[in-house]
Length: 120
Image (tube, rainbow, N blue to C red):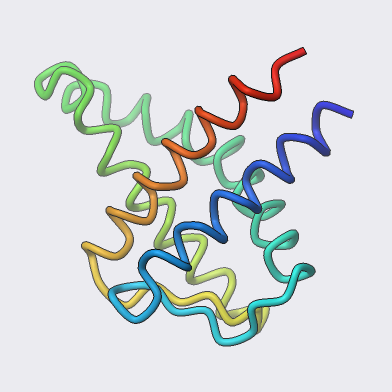
């Protein structure tokens, strides 16, 4: 049940990021619930497998920047989500660095807030 709630939280966070940044770095050509659910699932898989590897590889940068390098890692993961989405024709596209940066920031903040509200 927790997995379904986390996927729903990620889908809501992605939806809010697209709504806020539509046309300013993020585009969603087919905004259906199914596409957001698939994006949330893909984003969860990316975060599960790629994020730990990138944090280990980028550990010196994370230490030097006092953790702010994790924002760049999240931005990179947002670009990966966009690339996979385009390969699967889900309609999600990142068109600029700042769109990916602010999109990943919005997703992170909204996810933290919703996960705290929906705690067991």
